[in-house]
Length: 371
Figure 1 (spheres, rainbow, N blue to C red):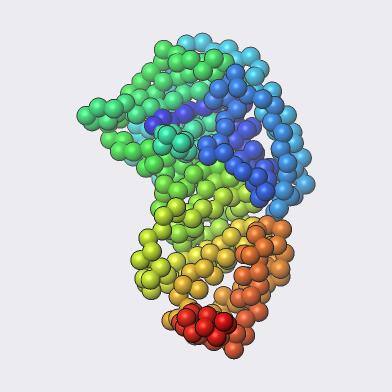
Figure 2: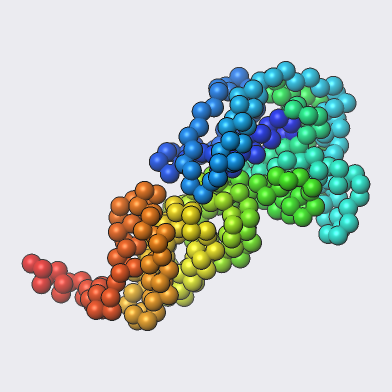
């Protein structure tokens, strides 16, 4: 596991490639996002298509401009040992004091550090290696990569090491982090909370773009106003989340790989999933069609699993939501079967509901009748 402290021009990449500029509706997304300066020798000019879903022309123009900056990421970067040491010292200072920093007042030094930060990211690669990536600007348009790595031992410790941004080799600057750090996930949550609440950076609402949230318990979280494009969520954990005005244009939703069959027979579990997902669905802007379709179809899957214990009156509130105009427009953003399923539930009469319920309760009789 490692944490990257990556100041400099990389903020143009994290700022908008993971912010509403990439269309993933019809494209496969790599398991681990590729950072433009993680391995400088492998970088190629970036081309991108724009879905236009939920975006405005100003965002499009800004993204085009920033893509040009991304492709210029190989510009010469010269730092002294003192520059590397300063970045390490700042990060260690911030993390050392993260437990005691007041929620209402910061020291001038801490405020200065937070104002340099442009983004804080959490990710996990195929090897289950986790890291936090912090992007800041100690110098305009320059980059330093600093990794905070987990060192195995008893107890496990965290240390900071800088990287030469042009070669990706380890530099000499290194410092240990406090021993009270328990894990990267909790450190990430503390750092982002501090950053969101206190940074004066106008980009702070983009802090969660591209984040892999499948390691976190997201139930009840307030993510209103955040840019969440290319972030990853499990459907089963999207309960009672506030997504009001959040940008979910290219967010990736996943089902847990091996759901326990018993859970689909557990009425309390299904009810919790249905109500929690529906609460989340109601906060999503109607112009974010793919997110609407994905979550609506998941709710319907759970409703069908619970169908034998429902009455027609029980489904009316869901039906009212599915009858909204936006669900007639989701065809281009989901599969045909999901689209048809949403329309079926939107138009289902009481008689059709009772027939569906009867056929679910008596599958053998219905099969015999068909034969």
